[in-house]
Every structure is written in structure tokens, then in C-alpha cells.
Image (cartoon, rainbow, N blue to C red; front, side, top):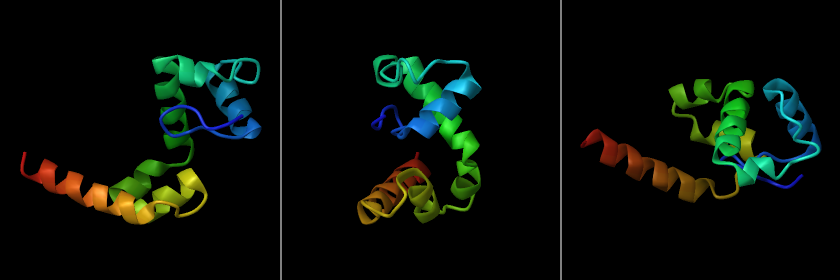
Length: 93
């Protein structure tokens, strides 16, 4: 139950919970998440909602989001740089 999809759904427990909530049998077909663009979106949105990631986004708390998604802070420095750049570009749009 390796990472798949846009948020990298991982672990048998997450596959089971997500599958139950979305009425998908992800335990028997975990590759659905990476094989289907819809599956990648559905599971990412499920993870986002289940973990209340919008509350972190509303506060610009990228560190908190990173911890929820990754279980640690690997790549945080780079992620903060990309986030700052994206905000700058979008502010000028």
C-alpha cells in the first residue's frame, strides 16, 4: 500500500478508510488510485477533507500541512520556497 495519487495515499488503513468512504474496493485494487486520474483526484480530496487541511491552508500553515501529509518535514524548505514563488506569481496575476 505504497503512496499513490496526488497526495500519495499510503498505508493499508488509509486505503481501507478511503475505500469505505468512497465506496471503492481499494484493498483489492489499490492501483486504481494511480491508474485512474479520477481515482487520484477522489483520494486526494478525501484525504484533504478527512484531515481538515483547508484549516491549515487558510492560515498559510504549510508546515502543519506538510506534517499531516508526510508525517514529518522532509522537503519543507523547498516546499516553502515554491509556495512563496507561487504566491508571488499569483498576486501579480
